Image (cartoon, rainbow, N blue to C red; front, side, top):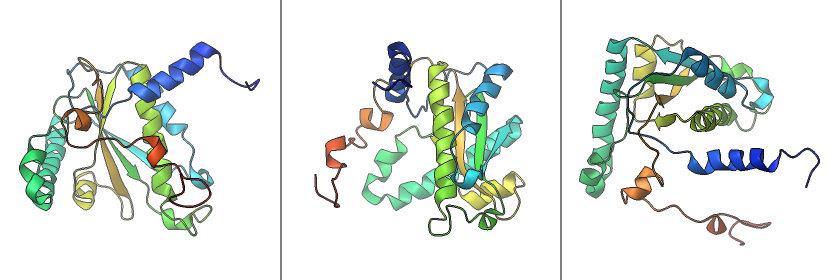
Length: 215
């Protein structure tokens, strides 16, 4: 065991948060105390980012009318996604895909404008800005679970429509609508698994050695 390791209890808590994190769709209203929200956002802000560019931008949605407009954009994209799914259309429409109207806090997370100026770590992999933003969201997700709050990542929206709605500058791009807040209970397993939409694959099928496809 490394001398830098956390205590057994601390390690267990980290692994528990990872294992019990869920993409939540069912919320029970309530509120998130300002100091707790600040703590969660600070955890997100501590995420690693390529070239220390910190490409994430957080927009807290507090106007009910704006929340409703975002819900409308998601509803529109849900219909388009259902059409694209063909024979699974009806099955998809039975799924609950967001909790925008029910969650205590609604956040939009976006990539900043002017990202082309950052070439450190992005010259050959420009999508590393998106990877960095995803790390910030994961930090927020795990911290929220540790605090007993649910969080759901909604990606069913047309990015430019949401950017226009929020007055975002040219070159920026929203990547996530995050529903955050108290829940009655956490799902025992991922909701899409419980609903029979998909079955997670075991790590053994996704782990190779030296060459692709070599287990």
